[in-house]
Image 1 (cartoon, rainbow, N blue to C red):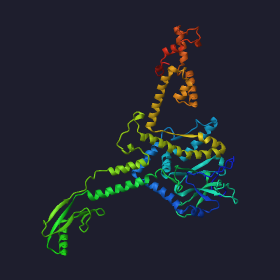
Image 2: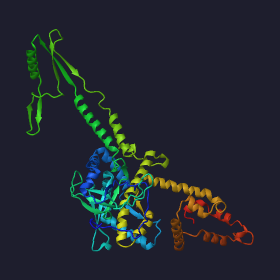
Image 3: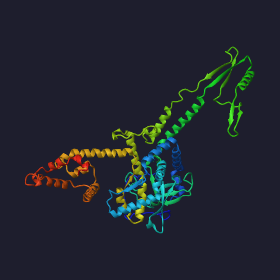
Image 4: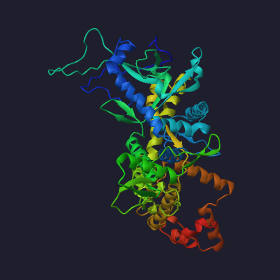
Length: 544
């Protein structure tokens, strides 16, 4: 790895040798090459056409993203995925499930904020997410000070997807150390080294001026959609290529038809008698020139001039008629019918939105958004919300990779520690979906109603812990946090202890002692007395 530009993070613990008849899975479009091959051989191995396909596909994605309907659909997706707020960042790290000390969690949050500042994510979140969504991949070069790597990442520099390619080099020993069975099936696929090839002028064609960059020096997040036949990473816009082209053609043909068929034209039948063919044509041109007056406006000079020598397809028709006919006649050719119908255009617009997983209700911009109950939300909106959640989950790998590099370089975590803890590191995005807020409110309401229904059976069939965990769906951390908050508010006098209030009322009344000598365990009606004084509906009225 010494010849590679950049830096590498090596694991402290070496993993044991494993064997499998199946090759390693790669869903990031990595090209596999043999060890020792020069870059020119790398091109010959995979074929130039494959790289041209990658190159052309990315350019095609960017081209169709400029189409008005596609741009509107992409804006809907990005606006749902990335929300901006004046007080909060678009995304934050969530460490509630992380089994680590508070000191480690604090450092992780600090380093994540540092990464957000390097990306300028608060201001450029939409642009970054849009690049990733359209291209189907995104690359960032992690710059560090090689003299002081313990200071972490100094700069994050975006690299155009047309200029970089990931390569996996398979190293082979001189001696064949692979394990084989009787059928000759290979079980050892050898050691692999991943790196990136950077082309300053783009990797289209046979350009061999490439710079090798170490794998750990690049943050690379693909879309997760792959063409396994050609081992290519596809964009989320790949399904929309055909729909956009069809929509363009139907719109262009509609314009041509309307321009050619919209105006009414006249047909002049000129009686030429028994004139010969040449004389008849000359006579027809004389009549046409006599009555046809074509005035045109010259925009370059601002003058109006006569332009009779040109005849367009939108002008009148002049036809000769022989003797014996009905003489000179003028008729009107009607214009095109049903020019106001746009059903074919609407069909392809709906097809485009379906290919991008956009609810068809959003196609009608004039329709208003009504907030009702969650059971009134369409299935398309629910599917769209799940699609946005998947996009966020995939895009979060960018933060995860950058955070890994930052924590390891600064010595906060070791590579082995990171492999154990990375699954518990989540990222919380700001929700700007009214449906999400409405759903959470309704769910809380239904849970509280269920608690009221279960309350008569509390202590008999249900425990308080069961109600909090299974009905209210409170986690272990939430239970602990809520209990601490309640105790703190009791001490501050914000809320009053229900048991203390009951004891005070019992001392005032003088008849609250339970039967059986005052022992609560003897079965008295303490609970009934308490329930008679305080009903469940009083908790929200400030009486307690």
